Image (tube, rainbow, N blue to C red; front, top):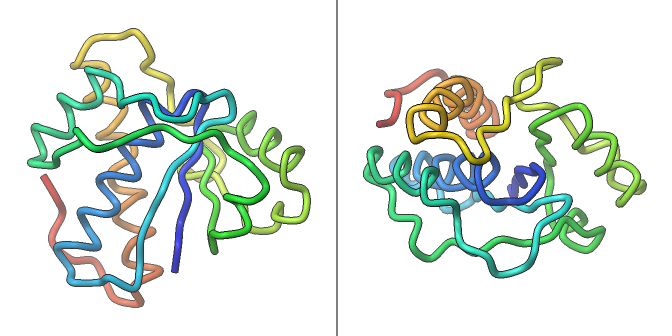
Length: 152
């Protein structure tokens, strides 16, 4: 099972979701489930933002190897679930990869994940904390188990 998280630049929200979700998979010994991320307007190969890296570090997650990717139809086809951070991302994803539109969902139901771009580490932490319960719920849904121990 492969899940892709998508935001604008693939430097803040979607990398934090990707890294945290993969940490959940690792801690649960579930190599059959993995995540990746991409951005609607991303440049391939950019690192995670300094603030997002700090949030991940506080969770014990190393983000040094993370590199951004642009959302493409080919990447979308490789995934079973596509998770948008906002309604505008969902619309752009459906336009870019119309054949994969049925796989797209919003992380927070019908609410958008706020964009912390350019904000403080505290703002990034608040955004991550708003995503974390949904990421954990998604993990438990795809893993086919009940709620487990929360992460960081």
